[in-house]
Image (tube, rainbow, N blue to C red):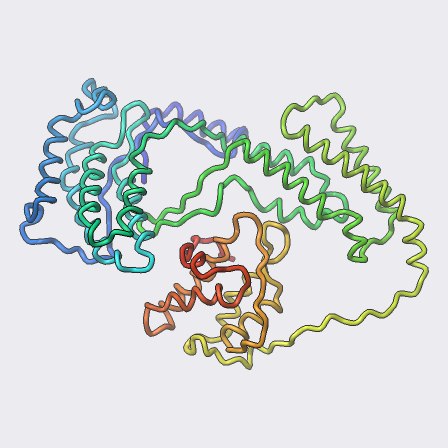
Length: 478
């Protein structure tokens, strides 16, 4: 969707603000632009045109009549559109409505063609609702205060009529689609706008104030430094519009994230955790490091009286510093004694050696096992919680089990952070897309690729995987 700016001064102010470094993003209000309507495209589905279209049946004759009636009334169809009777400088009737009759009829025809092609497919709901979102967006957007997109209600009325006519044939599917339509048609209260720049300020401020310089916290900094958690969930890709969408979190959610991340890190990474793993060394040096870090923190807070999330983060850090220093002081004499003792020999942890070069790909014989390995080794990357989704040897065992047919190997358990389940499913959906295009003799093999995840890993029910089996565009790019 492209936009036309109707208030150049607002755009210039936003760009200057970004150029001065005041903001990361430049943004303008909905009052300062409009988005023109555009013709939809459906290249992947044959364009079936019924004889004598659109006067071929009552449904289409009614649609044609409704378009004519609507445009005869417009802009006196509602109070907000009626503001266009005194045309603003950016408005020209022919430019906004001249192409609408052909555009609506074409979008309606594409809707029916898509329905016929996809309604019997396992992922029918995703196909149809993604196209409907694309169709809704194609009606554009008027500047704030001028009402809904022109003639969108004509298309949605036709759409409801078309779907309701299929209720007897598809009694389980029609209610889901009508509920989808209702979510668009029901009036929504105006949401409080989120200032993305303020989210970024809060996150950057936390990154600067958190004590990453402490030696046993430093390894976590790159993980948090290379992300910006402003999206509410992973972006969802629409195959028809070619756009990925995600909701922006609120300021309240960002505050919750900062506080929970602070708590999670300090609970998981501390001198007690090091001791549990027998990695706690040089306690005196660590105690000095913590005392200095605590004092630096205290000096930064002098004269400050925070009333936002920083106040809670500061309290958490103070408690953590005190506990760390006290623990090291208590443990120091015992650790010294342990260092003086000769450590006992420990049995090495047994691992299952897997030679992938000797594995025959019985799952998809046309695909080289090296390609399987390259794809699924992406799971050795770190999840949000700082740990890899899978260790390398786990990936090898999964490949040997699923692709080599060695069912004696155990199922693996995938580590993931908050909101990353769909990301993991996306990797398997991406693998299916490649395999069905290049190696599989039939495209109707999705279920066995769904089972790659549900049958060989713990905690991934087949139905849940199938419902979310779609690619999150770009999520696993190197």
